Length: 338
Image (cartoon, rainbow, N blue to C red; front, side, top):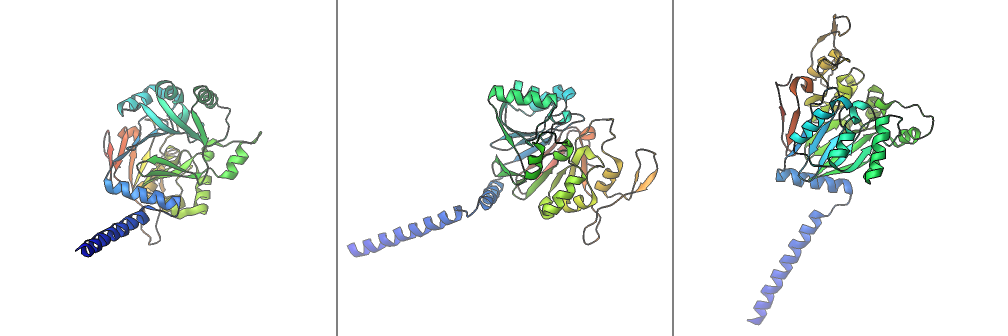
């Protein structure tokens, strides 16, 4: 009888050991990249919603990302839109911002930093690591030092953890550009020094572009065109024709494009040729002379014309994307997608 009991206990203990061993091997990863993918997949299965809001802040950029664990802000609108910027953050219930990413030091991207550092708790501020003579840049750098807020430069290859399985991989600027840009006497081109990166959560992804123009797009295509493919595209440079080249859009091939711009802005954003390209329209009305012109359309290798959904803050107000890592929805404050 004792032998039988001993055998049964031995079998039970062996089974427990085997099951524990299997569980341990599934949770262990050989690389940080696969670890992040596993974490993202697990969170997506759990169905925790992540929201991405392109805030209606006029002719500027500010995108709010809220995961179950962190609040992240990419750019902070323009100086003359600070009140609107603050209202949008308060409306979203923001008290603390874990990460602030400033794509480049133009006023319409860093103009709200003064309000942000005054009225909200800020964890870490990231930028492209290149100095600027901008008074706004100098001002926020002084405040970061005075308040003891962490500051970190971003370069291609960096990966930020936004919590809940959401990651942000930096594609630009390159290490070489940052090194050049930190040297005295270097002539800066802020738009083409923008932080460009891709947010990934399970099967969902969104490409953030700052004001990067076609020279940057060409570099990104050469570096890794396949990695550019994304579910959603934040339109480069407010929908300007200086970006969104045919080759770039072919690589990204987004299901929807979000454009941040102000009503009746002086730049004519979004430009009609780019908008027609997003929508797959054969012709467009030239913004300069009013003539009808043929659109440079985007086609895949099968010859199919790219046609995406387009949302603009000047027409749709704040645009909210909600995703669980598998499915996603886009909700506009006003109107529908084009």
